[in-house]
Amino acid sequence: MIAVVYSGSKNACWKISQEGKSMIETHTAGINPCFNDAKQTLQILSKNITLIHNAESIKKIYVFAAGASAKEKQKELADTLEQFFVNSKIKVKDDLYGAAIAACHDQTGIVGILGSGANCAYYNGKKPEKNNYGLGYILADEGSANYFGKILLKNFLEDKLPADLKTKIEAQYHLDRPNILERVYRKPQVQTYLASFLDFYLENRNHKFIQQLIAQGFEKYISTYILPTLEKHPNEDIHFVGSVAGHFQDQLREVADQHGIKIVSVTREPIHNILNYYTN
Image 1 (cartoon, one colour):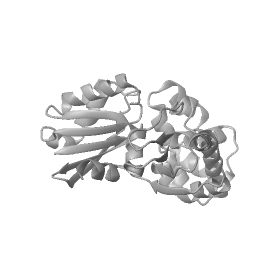
Image 2: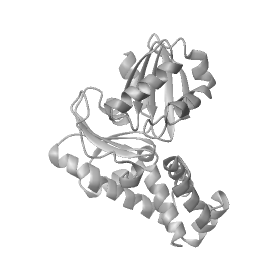
Image 3: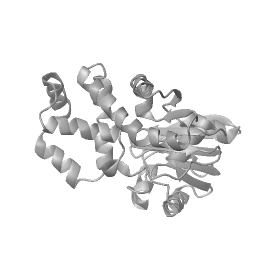
Image 4: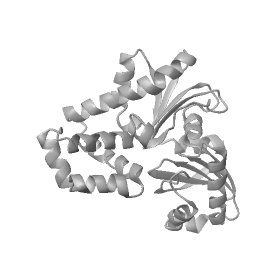
């Protein structure tokens, strides 16, 4: 058996195959080595019955995780996973590497991630080019789920939400200023909390105010990530991967069109393409 894992900060998708055929798919909380220590990661794994039942049978695992761009983080996560998957050889790369494989396979292209976080890079057909992005939910992540969560809460706290949206969000999440500030500044897993508000965007995606926030977020993303990358690598195909890109691809394409940019593909769940790449 082999397994492939694609993990953002919020969620991780696992696919297990045998003899090239996909057998099992399961999900866990995200396994970002920048936010989860070994104990937390092992706790996440030990709560998943599917992984427990198949742990000893899996011989190879390819992991693509947010927060795993540095070599030391890759080793740290691999060492942790080896404690659970005792018979496995484990290779860890960052989520951008996995996104590039899912979108481009062995072809060159520019790959953007818009999921719980945000990133972008030129892919030369073998690996993503190093960049200055991937700075996380505090310093960057424009256009991502945690970015949109932050913007939504900011508008709520500044009393800038339209009355109907304010009523909805108060009833659904029981929000108030002390509760939000406590959750954001004093409790762990802030990025997961912020990203959880993507559901509110999805439920209210036809509201004019929500559409404006989405368009503004995508404009920031394209200006910050795509345009500088295109300047270095003109005429490359542009691909997007991730839940935000997938759910709101019409708005993303519209903003891209305003810059004369054509998006070749949008892949909401890259795990399927990654598994095909490693089993075929």
